[in-house]
Length: 333
Image: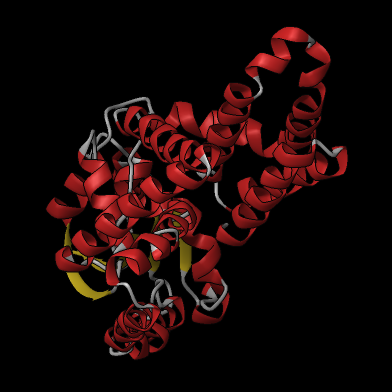
């Protein structure tokens, strides 16, 4: 998503500058690709469109023809994303059927987002926020439009996200695309730092120190697992199951990554994808042969079952067997 958002932003800025239809079209195309990469890419795209409407409001009032390039972008985006938009709307109503049961809500999302973008370090966040603010001030002093752009996109993204946080489970990582704006702002602090230090060498030395301080975190970043280890979990599951056992996967949509490595046909087990307590209870009642039931559950089960009924059922009727990152395996008791 980050790659496509960055490209969309490049062509957006070019389109805002020269009003070339080709750039507006490419903005629409890369915006669509960003949305296909992750549904939350829609928020940054919406922020860019709102900013464009604000920036071009005067020209649009004079002639509605000035709105045509933006309509072209939005039209291309809608056309390319139509199947996904339908699914996203359906998912939105499912997710909002009850209050969010996990995630960050309200203004605290702002702090948590900057905290994570700054490497989960309070001192680093404080330093980077100072540089970010200095960069925005510098942008306003050199080119007001740049400052307005940085502030507008940051503010619009947070406002939309805070509103959504009361309706859907919200994680700061959804806002990872803000790193583009964040680091652009920090980079713009170069000029005031040079003025303050009076020597470019001091600034370059400071940048070198920052790079060196970041190096210890890189080996773990590139060698440790950042996603669920489905290969390892599949091997562990195959080791503990016996022919005739039941394997219940929750939420049901994680069957796809699990089955990439695990074959219930080879393992001679029966596999099910469930998301609710009613389904779990129904299988338990049908298990007349008293086969062992293994439950493969991920941490986002609360997203699929906001009521918490499935988790409560598992706590009452199963025993924990193992955990691998965000994947849990339970066995029937």
